[in-house]
Length: 128
Image (tube, rainbow, N blue to C red):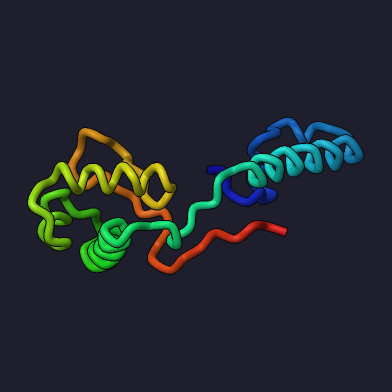
């Protein structure tokens, strides 16, 4: 999902802006900002309000584990923490969380390759 447009993003998207006349530069920046804004407006807004009980448990465990350990847990550690029998069930929950935009699997074949994008109780806001 695109993040809210910033001046750095605009300048990164148009590296030749510095060589343009100032009125063209301003128009180019406005155009790029409008493009980022349009991308933001059509992007889905993940929230924590549409999670199942198990998904919320996994999200909370991930937040606690990452804050205390500095890295993501293994699927077996998640399974033990939320009281399920196998890693397959955790895998299904993580896949659902990824579809909802709450977590991102950085490298599907590696251990501890999860990034928590939305912490418990956190909501994305629409930029003005």
